[in-house]
Length: 387
Image (cartoon, rainbow, N blue to C red; front, side, top):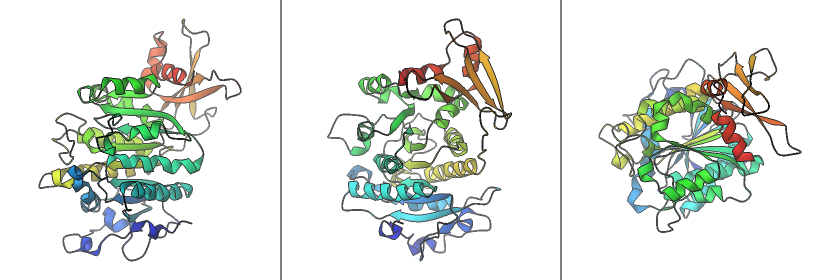
């Protein structure tokens, strides 16, 4: 096994001073923490990892302080009803440059994933998503990434910091393990239309802020379709989360961000999550943004410990619905779980020699579309992407 202490540093002792107290049933009192001795990972479900690196962006120096400010808020929150099997592994040791630090994050996350432990990352700039994503290369299987950000971070401008164009590296990664990419809560007036068109030409999901906020529950199937989530704090409006160099007056509310994290937590396939671009130097005196991120993490953890193991689709735990549509030869099959109430739609695979169909997460609204004679959005997008 990887010697984690080569890549991770313990939480500094001054953090555990008089102003930090772990009351009964708080997260800080309930989890293992890397102080003097590295935690045992034998019975750990989730591992916290801090990043104290600004990605080489001198205008964004404060992000290096993010992990400790988030911990101050997170450790004071009361745990939920379920037992926690969580370890805080401290912070990634900074390398000689941001690329080396990113490589260390990749190695740590890869080893955790190999042992079925979910990496929960906080701190650092958004480009550390690259390390989070590359950790899956050793898994040798396709993964889907959900990116939540007001910006697209896809510019070709080499003069901008890497946190503003890192998606190029993920999309062009060789070997390509990206099954799908979804971008949630982008703000059109902040995004180059050519960059947006590039994503859409690849049949990736792109959801504007207005569409996301109009029906946040409708985002659940998209979240359920992904294995890793990257959350840029700039996606949350500045009145709720001012602590970002790129904070915007419009965005998701703190409550909506927490709801997204709940959906991510209950997703059985979600295996890593990262919270990036928090800059305490930009936060208010109460460190409001740190509180919002801590609460988002709380909701993710609660979702994780409320996951429901869905049975086989052909079992009695699923209702099946066949909907005949005039513009399509074969009826479209939907599945509804009687355990969780979630929906899936069956999409034919046009590629010979492959499985005959995919079962894709969808919502009740997709079923309603089919009932009214329309091809469901999730069905159509999936077929277009794989045609």
